[in-house]
Length: 86
Image 1 (cartoon, rainbow, N blue to C red):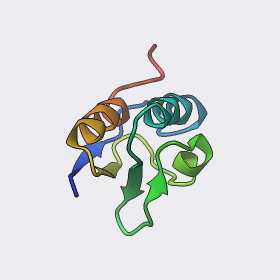
Image 2 (cartoon, rainbow, N blue to C red):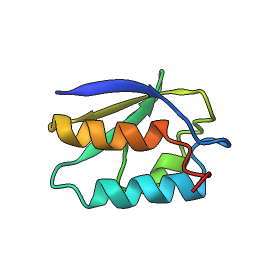
Image 3 (cartoon, one colour):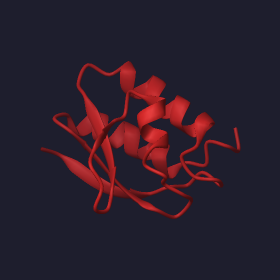
Image 4 (cartoon, rainbow, N blue to C red):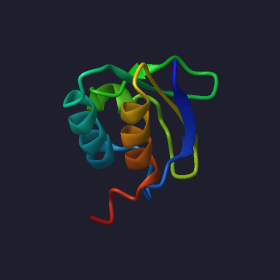
């Protein structure tokens, strides 16, 4: 299964706004995507609430995984981006 590890780029981590943006993008995909922090259980990237439970702060490493490499790339790019700056 394709996966990649990226660094959280949002200034205050994956809180409400970045989580909502990521969840909206993941929900629009045709394949499930999960996010996980080191030592943690993967969560559904299509759920903002589940993303926030990761407790991923700026600079944290997050593993993005899916059956579709394009989906991994798309969601990974959002996790790396500072979604608070938009």
